Amino acid sequence: MSESPARPRPSVAALFLTYLKIGLVGFGGVNAWARRVLVEEKRWVTEQEYAEVLGLGQVLPGPNALNVAIQLGDRFGGGRGALAASVGLFGGPLVVLIGLAVLHDAYGDLPMVQAVLAGTAAAAAGMILGTAAKITTNLKPAWPILAVGLAALLGGSVLRLPLPWIVLGLAPFGILAAWWTLRHPGRVRP
Image (tube, rainbow, N blue to C red; front, side):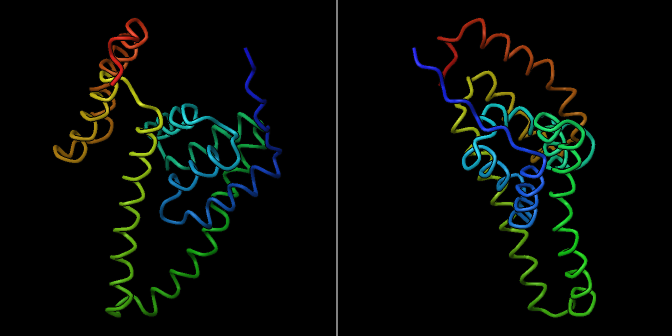
């Protein structure tokens, strides 16, 4: 039985530079880009590990991309790693955002600028849906877990329930689905 090769362990500087790249290139769709960089390119975490920290990041207060950066930064570099990933993630975009805010203040009423912003919002929504589909496809969750995810999707998108209600309401079902899946692995796979 062969062991899987050891995954690289990033330095604090590598965390900063990688998250700086993620923040600048993934502007408006950071989680989609972060998953690609951290799981596929750098291979610092597995698909499962990324899904777990992203899930936790989404139920914690604050921006989920920042919550993920803090978790992974801490995992690999302690407090210094968490700080480096956070500053990298938001430092570059903050500079760009300040520049864009100045430009928007001057030109935001122009129809062309409004059209660009509407197109950008649509692209960001597409990136979120694409990332969710890719994670779901790669992880191939069992039917009970997928059902909880679909219930959360319906609760948020159709019923427009607040996130805390969805999390608190579905948490027992998620725990039960995970428990059932672990107890009956052959019966619940799609």
